[in-house]
Image 1: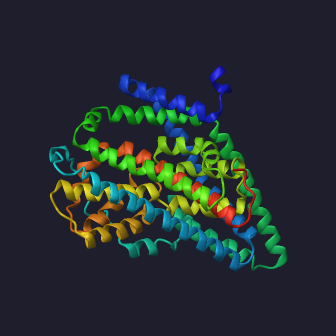
Image 2: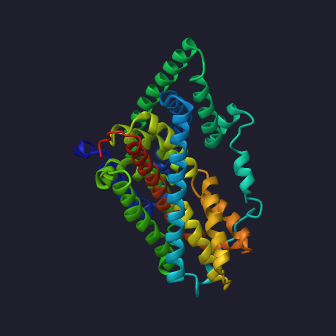
Image 3: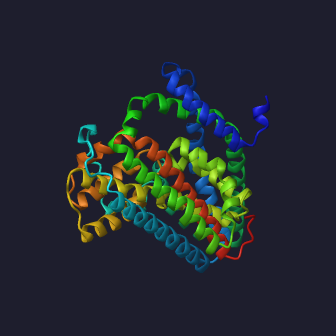
Length: 406
């Protein structure tokens, strides 16, 4: 068929459009195609852990000395903190300017069960860095402790004797090469997977679509506007000014992982595709890609940070609670810390939002106000999360003197 001669991102876009129509007009028939999305997500999750483990270990061994690793780590973390802070400030400015929560209809709220126990202290985020059992962490797909273990393992491989160092380096480079081939194979089925995922989600949320035109519509526009400014202006400017690269070319190269992130609402699901695209299309080396992208999928949540800030301010406005400057500073700082602890899975931002609500003494039930339209915002903010990770990879690669393809 001619469609399969199109570039992959065009195939995904066509599948996305058709899936929206199918899910909306044929909700009862979604089960016939939904299984494709389930299999696709399972396949992506299957490769995430071995891909992260092998890529980080091979990347760290190629970086070399501890000073090089430290320099790269400082650059990466500094950039992630800066861009997340920039995203939060953008959202805070827009939500104070537009004030979408003033006069909002509280009857749209939904009840969320077991919300009071979902908050996570900042100290818990730090504790989760160290796995009690690395095999258990791998089985549960806990990315942050896997990253820490892989960094430590890779670093001490470089401190081993010549024979062991060469053997382990070659082993994990070989494993990484095989995992990238497996990932490339899975990527071929992305259009079918996207069709199944989106059709199923649209069929579930047809009733809540009417809320978009109601009082939640303005809230959605503020969030989407903030994401558009951050993803369409701030990040490209940083790529242009700091990375001396072409943001437009890089965006075209990232079409497949970004569309996948939008459809799945999962940074982890898009990670294998991001790594493949950044390395082979934008020309970033494996040592940069393997370090920045897995770390970014775990702690660099630009879109989530912006969304959480806007959502908390919206909830305060809807309840008629005025937050002064000092309280808004607390929102900014807590949103920054909470975004770091957000898991790369759908709707994780809602869970982490309870931290911010607690910090400024707002009712946790306020999350129910925004639940009706959270899915489309989840898809959008995940896209910006992934876009921010890939931009970081290009900028840091350029700062290390690499010649990329963008």
